[in-house]
Length: 157
Image (cartoon, rainbow, N blue to C red; front, side, top):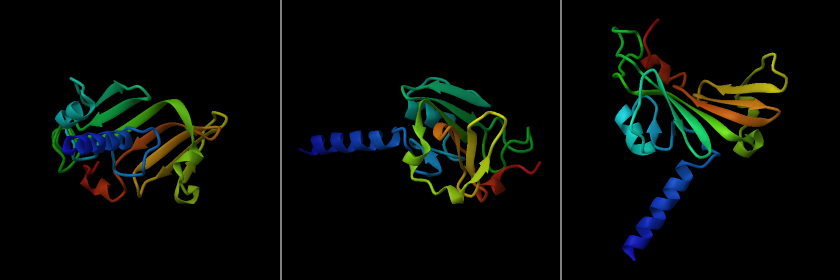
């Protein structure tokens, strides 16, 4: 009975962590910005490599791009108070775009950026450290980065 409950609980946690529609948070799938290390990413994603400044991880529903600090501040000006090989950003490039409306996001909390690509809008919230890149209302990629508050940990350039 105890084993069954544990397995069901683990399955539910995994399903929530690796679903396409995320909760808006400062981590993804157990990888926490400015905390998780290369070794954490290897364990969580079941991969064997991670290289600074970034690594690509093809997954079933997306391609992850995980950015790492290359060196501590002062030796290459990456992140203050952050050791080398710590995750500094995550980009999720979705294989199948998802309607922006599926995320339940209040657009008024996000800045909108456009470019010359017709239908492209990027919605960014620097206070939360998240950005959605859309084309014709469909999310193609999601960026997780240090929030405005967390940026004080970064090197002064």
